[in-house]
Length: 375
Image (cartoon, rainbow, N blue to C red; front, side):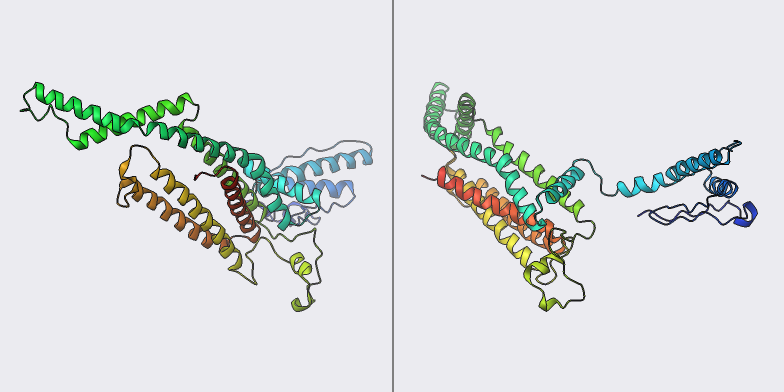
């Protein structure tokens, strides 16, 4: 907030500089009360100039009207120079690159459409996800299906490589008399070499069919920054009190029990958590987030079991299974952590998170129906 403009400590008293009353500054409007008289106006400007160390010039003219006009122009320019730092600091509170752009876009959509905020945010979320992330999700699902089919081809490589390595190890042992332990490969070494060869051929096969593994990271690299940008944009929007102007507001003197549903929404401060039911929004958000985590966990578990050449994947004590369990546990804890954050976040921001989680759940159900991963 712009602070009142106080006199510097080095400035003299008003009575020592000028006999006329000083210029009055209001904290936000910075309105100068100028008396329409040439001499008094010049004294007022001189007082401001000495107080804030802003130079002014003496207008010499035979016409009092021209002199008065010149002083008015100088006064306006002086007020603009003095008030510029306050305006810059106030406008810089909510400006932060692309986040402020998101805030302005939401405000423009709200004003243009005439819809309430609780409909603008979910509708915008669904539109953004449909235009940006849904095509990438469909592309990734088709790529995963093609990778799964190609993985079946690589499945026959591992036994053949193991057999050839065992035969080569036995042949080398017979040639050298079988006395040197360095000539024969142990079963663990044979398994490790077979896995390396399998992964090498799988990588080459994926590349030849234009489905490399690194393309699976494209969707998260788009979805996560989008989620962060929209969240920060809505956070900037709710830094101040946000009452929906597109809904009818009731009188503050009217009892809350006599208000209808629309009137209560009109009086709802969207920059604060929901006061009447504080845990309703976090519980809904946590439910959708946990459903998405469990669905993704089932996908990851089935993908790990179908990886060709890794026979220990089905074992619950294997390194891959333990890694998947760790990822799922971290995701579950993240969902609980998100619930805690949403209980203190604004209701409008929590609405966006709920809309995003709901869209992800519906999207996964649609993809499983159109392109099922399990056959």
